[in-house]
Image 1 (cartoon, rainbow, N blue to C red):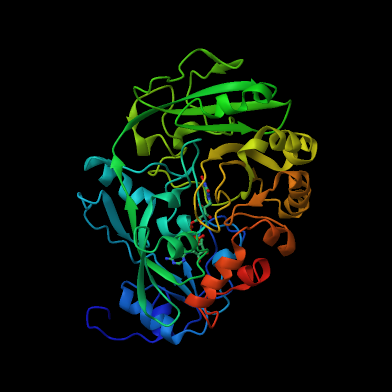
Image 2 (cartoon, rainbow, N blue to C red):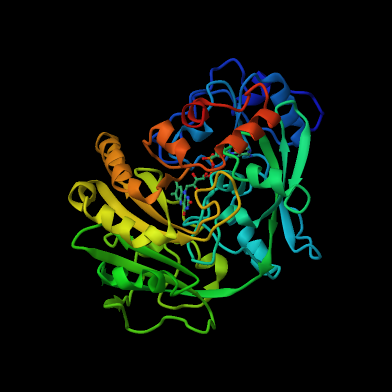
Length: 441
Ligand SMILES: Cc1cc2nc3c(=O)[nH]c(=O)nc-3n(C[C@H](O)[C@H](O)[C@H](O)COP(=O)(O)OP(=O)(O)OC[C@H]3O[C@@H](n4cnc5c(N)ncnc54)[C@H](O)[C@@H]3O)c2cc1C
């Protein structure tokens, strides 16, 4: 149908089977904790098709790889999956950038970039997420000097509510751009993204087991700066950090390799962050050299992570409150631990994106991978949010949270500017959904 240039009616193009007589079964998100509110899903393969869909749909949302745990991507009317838009353009050598269509996942380009001598500054814990969806929610990895993933976005093309195509770039439209990159899917459907590249690099990671939490009191900054990217994993039992993952640049001046690290012991086997699980799906540890994309994520691209069966929440506090915030959570350990697989503590450098939790301030992120026990988890989240409230806490846009809209809004410095931007891009609120209406409006 695309080849013949037929303009598709929304119904014709929406069903995965292409059979418009059968109602499509609504999709679920990766974790399976959410069924999207409509089965009316389009799978366009070109910008022109997206323009057509947007012009005829009264309300819609762009959909990435469906890894968000809340209703941020949901629509009651129309979803536009970018799954079919996965073109990767050749790197622009003079600009040091690569442009990809919005359905491309990080894992789709990493090997290609490495083979061509390029790298990205950071990656999230797994490479299966779409670049557009990740940047829309300020997805991040770790590292005191590493900003969240969207800091690599140099330009993006999107189709606005009126069906027109616009390109925003960091160099030409800095003010708009800072509002649009972490855009929560609210400005339009992103069709292409251009990312900054850096020269490829080698890394190695080591894991230390059982670090007393007390070590964090005087050394939080030192510990979190001990590698290019550092993650602390804890189940909050026994005031213990179960594992410290240190990812270092090969040949870095100060690569941590000793047998002990703040009373934690160097692991001699590959480990999964949840120690009882097989490390088969995890990226290589034990100080073995590897390319950046085989060390920065915790999980390998080649392994499809188990489907769901977990619930995630994550909270950001400004860096200066890192230790206090961790200890505030520790106080709730008896309530949290029974429902938890594992928590991860990471750091993210500041950025300029209006809706980013790290807007103008470096942050510590405290993440929870809970068991799929929503009845219990929905009681724990308000407790954790209350415990972290002295620390200007904000949630991850793509994970579960229960803040009242008033509290959430009071912590977003640039909310009024973002709302004005939405009005400019989307005067008829086509891209507003229940999540945005509830939380921002
Ligand atoms: C197993 C797992 C591990 C994770 N690890 C991390 C991690 O290490 N760090 C971290 O910060 N987060 C992490 N996350 C959260 C995840 O990165 C975010 O939820 C991210 O937004 C998911 O991207 P997605 O492509 O699945 O987007 P979706 O969930 O499909 O959508 C997210 C948002 O992006 C918008 N969107 C997507 N594509 C487009 C487009 N083309 N145009 C316009 N809007 C669009 C949607 O409308 C929605 O608002 C993890 C999630 C899972 C399930």
